[in-house]
Structure formats: structure tokens, C-alpha cells
Length: 49
Image (cartoon, rainbow, N blue to C red):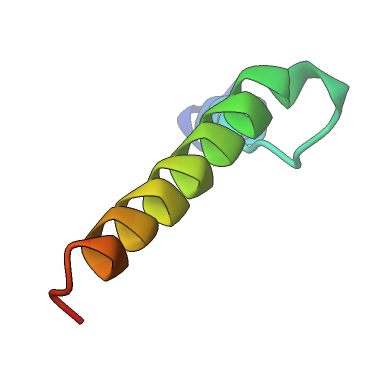
């Protein structure tokens, strides 16, 4: 195996396509957007916007 092919194999292993094994990223994304909405509601309620 050459250095170039080894680098290509490593890059392909690191590339994520969002398949079923990416569940933790999905949960993280949902929690992040929930936090954004809660902060927006709080800011609106206290009259900063």
C-alpha cells in the first residue's frame, strides 16, 4: 500500500454521510435547535427584541 492509497483509505473512513450510525449527531442537532428556540422565547418574553 502506498502512502497515497493509505491516505485515501483514511479519508474515506473519516467521511460521514449521515447514515443510521450518526444518531448522536441527530440528537445533538435537535437539542441545539431546541436551545435556540428556548433562548429566542426567553429574549422575546423579557422584551429585548
